[in-house]
Amino acid sequence: MKLHFGLILVGTFAAAAALAQVPVQATAPVTPAEVPVVSKVVQKEVSAANPERVPGYVLGPEDQIIIRAFQADEISDKPVQIQGDGFISLPLVGRVKAGGLSVAKFEAELTKDLSKYIEHPQVTVLVSDYRSQPVSVMGAVNNAGVVQLRGEKSLVQVISLAGGLRTDASNTVTITRKLSEGTIPLPNAQTDPTGRYSFAKVNLRKVMDAEAPQDNIIIKRDDVLTVPKAQMVYVIGEVQKPGGYVLNERDSLSLLQAISLAGGLTKTASAKHAKVLHEVDGKSDRVELPNNVAKILAGKAPDISLHADDILFVPNSTSKTIGLRAAETAVSVGTGLAIWRF
Image (cartoon, helix red, strand yellow):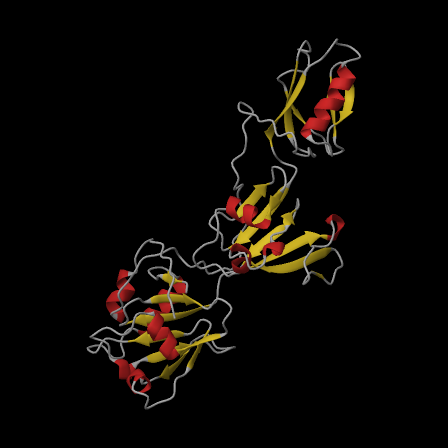
């Protein structure tokens, strides 16, 4: 099995390592909550001092624009916010509709209106602040928050605007859309019990590997994209590459597969004293399951399956039982652990 891995460095977990005899590799923290709070604008806003012209962009409520009209100083170079009804008020022409029109179409309409008062008006419309097409990107992305769409954007483009996937991200993203914006055009799309939203799941790995390019759909305003944290098996202690191993679409890994992915045991490992720390529903503490890895490696005992969030702990030969709680703490806190994808 070929191992493809990514490792992000942050902080250390020295205290736990001293107790558990675990080689610590620093990486990005595993966030305890699957969905971080949406709290900031991810895409850099355009300032009024540096507006831009995007002919195909469809204007909407709360967008801020700057109009430059030759021989019409009354309306030129003054920031104007589009109101909730899509209209703006301007000297000379009064109330005009901007919302729902592309920048190019609005320029043409405004030129037509101004031609009643000015001979051969020349109009340019610039967008100085995008506010009408928010998309929330939540979960295991590098910059969770709100992205303002600037024209048509696909699913992969929006994930990219949010900084891309974190190392511990799942391969699946859930798209939630108001039914007023239409049903999500995917075969697995469903309607929530309230009848107000459409939601569907997309396998990002298949999209990025060009196995399912048709699932790279266009994202609409007010869509919510949620990328959960991936399910992992943790291999800690006297192995060559300790850390969390992403299960991808698997339900489990065998113990031998996990040790193989971890690069095998170190020379100081006490294989016969290995333990699996397993979570049991309804219990706050993990159950410790002794596993004689030496016998499994020798074919004298059956291999076992490791499931999501299981911790395989291989102690040092000089410290056979100390450090289980420290190892568990290291996983729950999420610092000082490498995350590997294969």
